[in-house]
Image (cartoon, rainbow, N blue to C red; front, top):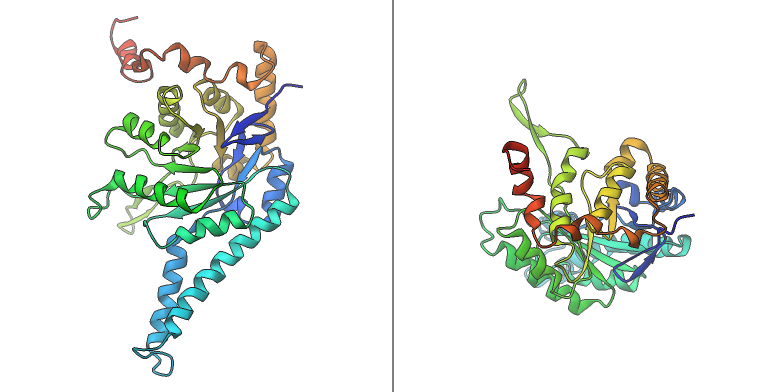
Length: 330
């Protein structure tokens, strides 16, 4: 039996494969199935800031139309605002409490957030409900022309959240930074415990018959893992926190590659929809079989083995490979 034990965000995991935040982690039955299938931890389906705020705004708009409810001095709207937020949050907190009672693996709460203010109390409530850690999916879109301090917003959010909670905090970020290496390193030094590379934006497509915008593939493809592989390989020896690999990781072979470049853990979602929750079990068996073939008895023996070889020259993960492919070098 190979030792797959891993430590992530200061938490003890039986193995490095985590069920990422998705619909499958949004119910107690789904989470229990994922634990049975071998998941080392689960990240609960995100509570969306927009979902709560939009529902609040809708109810407030309706209330304002009723003169019996609304007046300039009425406290009713404040009550509606608080009630809706607390009701939505309450359902999420109940899931955390139920999961902690039913599961033996770590339960990580998740907030998908776009602003810097309105949801800070969510983080504290999630900690109070018993979550082992918190993942912030910082969904700040680079196409937002109004946000002129795109990268600074990350640090302001982190600073505020860390003042509200004592549990470990990880952030899930996008690929869109002016200087990825400098940004990831700086984020790792902000007091967070982990960075998840990367979140995945909506993928657009065009319906040429209807001449309209439509949704592209809902699931990741294996080809999408290359950027994750690249940046974990470059940064794994440069950061002051754990790195979780996400996006495009579908098989045991993919997981091995991510561990070899230094990933602390691997988060999976699309492959669970495509192949079923037991895909985690199949991935773990492949990792164990490969470890046996290579003579490794624990994950720690090979984690980062490839990235360390190229630590002095990270160009091996970028331009050097291009040059080797298309020139006479090498």
